[in-house]
Length: 366
Image (cartoon, rainbow, N blue to C red):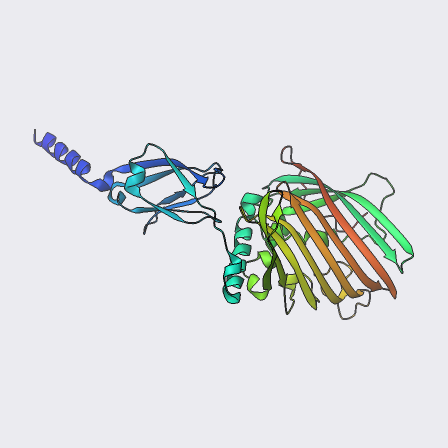
């Protein structure tokens, strides 16, 4: 009888202690404008470490201890305004639909200093949204590479190659180091006698322009403060509003321009307003010299075989969660001759099943 009394007392104690009551809140997070799911929304209980995140379809389940039943629940996602709910409100619902309002920036109504901060925020959000806006890995991309050279406006060369790319992590882990370690490629040839005349493909120079994959230059939040930024226009692209942000780096460095010797560097980047997806990057630069193996490499003091008086422009376009085309148009002097050098990479196909792994990069054509 005494033992039964102790057990009953213990059970009553648990029942009366709200800290042992766990409420389960289920629901879905949607875009208030489009009613599309908002993936990876951060959901947290105010002033605690309790929280969760919505899945890729916006669904979530949050466990709320009884003693926090009157707390505030925060919902926040990149590109959306934050919203708070009373935990009591959500607990009393069988299922909750939470709608987040897209964050919009009225750039024209703020002063120059504030405008620069807003533009840096837009670039940061574009960078943070890369894993959600672009394809993750592992992935294979089948591409076509074309290089055209014109020497002294008379002699012309054209070379073509197929490129098979393997990216282990894809755009879900954008960084320079991850891009270099995880993205490999192999040069394929349709003709047995195909070869590059110099043996050096410089294909890495094109890949380095994919700033979305490497989260570099203006898409690196740590570097955006080194750029002068201005909104060039706010067009509508395929029915979606966008920003076209012009950028320039007063003192070009290799981190911002990717060019070891750049003396001028500028361009513009197009970002969609609703999801901060990058759709286009354009740039132009000048440099007194380039290493033959790439603009990002230094020229040794004893090396006299390099390009001189270099100027170039480039364009990178994105479509269907991937890069669509990368183009670089470069002019320089080599061996006393003027050279016009056009390189173009077109991504024709993406494979996400039956992935073929590649362990190295074909820096040199055979």
